[in-house]
Image 1 (cartoon, helix red, strand yellow):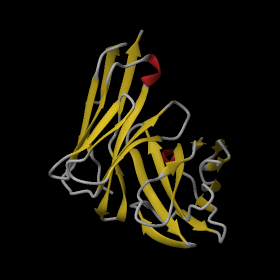
Image 2 (cartoon, helix red, strand yellow):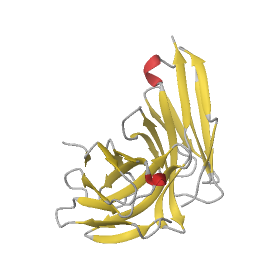
Image 3 (cartoon, chains in turn yellow, purple):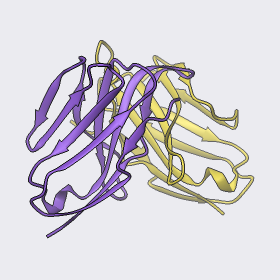
Image 4 (tube, chains in turn cyan, yellow):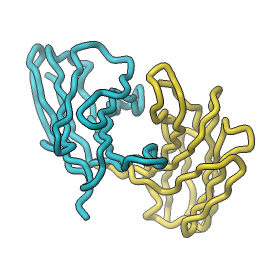
Length: 114
Length: 113
């Protein structure tokens, strides 16, 4: 069974640009969560999608947005990039049911903002 | 979300030694998870704990869900060089972001042969 796939693995952007990251969950998983990982702040929750609806949202500005498609694939978008947005962006998927809190992570997308 | 207090921040040990790390929170969680992250990769789930007092093993790894539901620890016995990495605790519970995973800042483990 394939794991969580994130594309691209690496991105370099400049301030003010926007970026879209993609995540394909494990087959059968319907919940997708996004996290930002930085050396200073660690892993911080961005948002979670389930059945194409945002179910939870972390404390990030509105420049960070996401969506989920009917096949459970998800994208996140960051507009008007800032230097501080440089981070590893991780996607995690989980099964529906009582074990929805068991999340399986992709390898991440490393975003560098210059 | 909430930041969990994970300690120690880093450990430098010799191969064969046992390792212990822990995580505390001011809030109650109904699930505790332990992950390991290698450089350039995403976190990989090691152990999941669902009940207060639960003690679970996965090979040389043992983790416990604290009785108060506000803490958890992870032990690694007889460490080997491939244990090198960053270990994260995560608690699942209600925060100002709704029900979400809250992570510790990680314990960086270095093992010398």
